[in-house]
Length: 219
Image 1 (cartoon, rainbow, N blue to C red):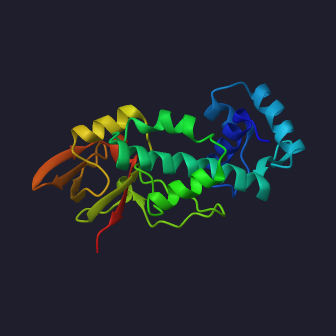
Image 2: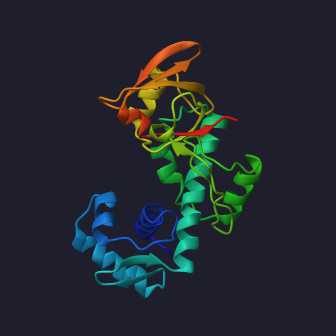
């Protein structure tokens, strides 16, 4: 049986390592978990004893296949519950994370699969993050950060890098959400801020926003 704390660590490693494919440092894990490096080391030893991770000093931590599946299952549940909360219970996208943090630890595989089917097998959560399938695989996305887009491009908002409540609420004030279409009108050389055309009106977007907003280029 995997404990709640162990699941949280596995999820952190999974997300830091870009879905389980790379080694990560104990310092990176400590920063994400907001804990001491010594506590991370203790947990890594426990996870290694259960064959969830491989750890080599100075080389970092890498999930085993068993660990990747366990971690992806937690992420899958979290993101499915976020979809459920937004689509079925009328939560806003800035309200769902903390609730999903609790629901992701429910152990019932049947409940997860039935929830997935009930939601008609969504591929992304309300923040545009991909939802792993039963085998833990994630569909590749062609999204890029808005800061990387050329002037004149027509973009569709497909996700956020920063899913904090403050950022999501700020995007709401700008009337930017998933599916919002806009054109990149210009970029300032001085501070790299952008002017976009949204609903036929110009809107100034800071470098901080453009570095945290994922888009797809509309063909």
